[in-house]
Length: 264
DNA sequence: ACATTGACCTGAGAGC
DNA sequence: TGCTCTCAGGTCAATG
Image (cartoon, rainbow, N blue to C red; front, side, top):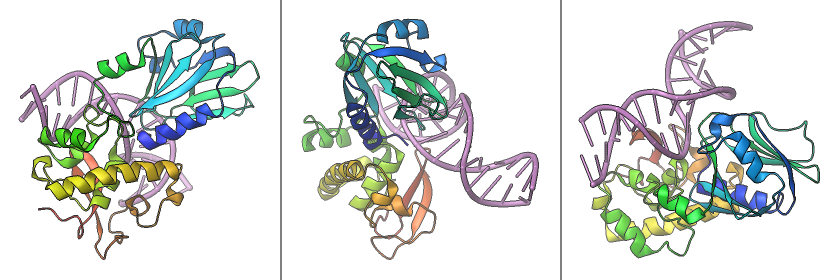
């Protein structure tokens, strides 16, 4: 679930709650989520420091510490943050709990084990090492950058959109939405897209991601014509009189309209 | 060198 | 009702 818009909302959440307060204590209840660092060492690096700011690249969140190090968070499929006053009222599966000097707590919750937390010196170094592609909400994201990605993709357009080393941040749900709004079948080979398809797609990426963020990623808030509200086999297409079909594309469940997203 | 598939993990919901 | 099976999602290793 946590794709770019979700992580963007988490980032804004942290920016408006847990900054500029001294960290009293960090409790690590599941050490296996830590990557490249032990609970002991992480505690030592975090305790008595403050969170300065939160940023994001793709599906990763970066939290700047007053020590100039960066906490890296990935939310896998089930992760989220919760800032709460009451230490007894933490979410289930809280793997990491930061307790601030003001008594509040910030929990990193993760139901399944897919997710990770680490500590790095340099945010852009980490991005380079992970071979993350360009984030589509930054200035580096241009039509010519997008065209280059399409030109170098051999597989389906869905695979290209969700390839994190090409574009960082788009996952299963939003790739379907982007293709739905652009009227392109998810199995279309990237190389077979017309110039018009590319223009529509580029516009759709921007529109879908920003709409999702504006909706605070709450399904109920999305416009009715969005696929996300009709992500169900055999549902009526909210844009035309077609039906929503479910297929597998590059190993993932994919929903699309059998009428306005015809395979060519 | 690239693209695709399967394993990882766990709980919700479907199906019997 | 209660059990078992399938599925969801993101990433990486293994396979094509």
